[in-house]
Image 1 (cartoon, rainbow, N blue to C red):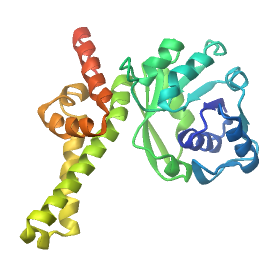
Image 2: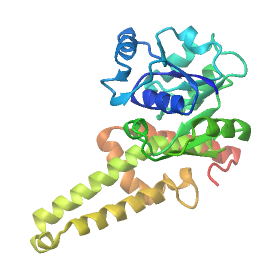
Image 3: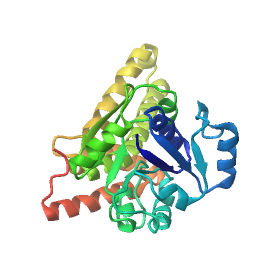
Length: 288
């Protein structure tokens, strides 16, 4: 049994807190908002962020960051990405050597183009692990099957966290590719938006300008189109030359850059270029 604090009481932090408690660990949940803590203590349910997922009576909720950090085996950093740096900065005076810090949020800092784990490591040098993957808080909270990856540069830490989080419905894989995991997590929503937008635009054009095709347009045809676009999306992110190489290839520029320009998420692509330059300079292999 581990003593774990989840720093951040949003939907993802709350879902992971419920998961970790079910796995037999002692769990404390911290929020900067006292009213959120009061609601959790009273309702034992996050009515706003994760309705329907009941939290155990003996789970601890606190707005005291010092109390949430000191003496814990594992600190799960689950605050929204814009507050990752400031929260890590506040935590660092209470963190002791040997505590494991795992960041579970996704994103890239706009000004520095650093990934979230790089931000946390700048503030707390011993923080070197991430947990990320194609997951939804409401599904994890309800106990639906989920697959996810723990990334850490040393195998011992990765395997330790794998055993902490994994159960019969929450499968955890491990990888040393922390940067690739984080960039994939940051990029996937951009790619998903691009894929969805492309499909919708194609369907609209078919219905408006191609009456013959429109008469033949079935849900099966729409599904086939979505599958083809999704396959392109996957190849963009996980191409044979590696994440950073394919993320700036001609195909992905057509698929991703258009939607990035439209919805204003340029930091994601800029960060990929930034980290690719560093990787090539250092002759690192980011995805194997």
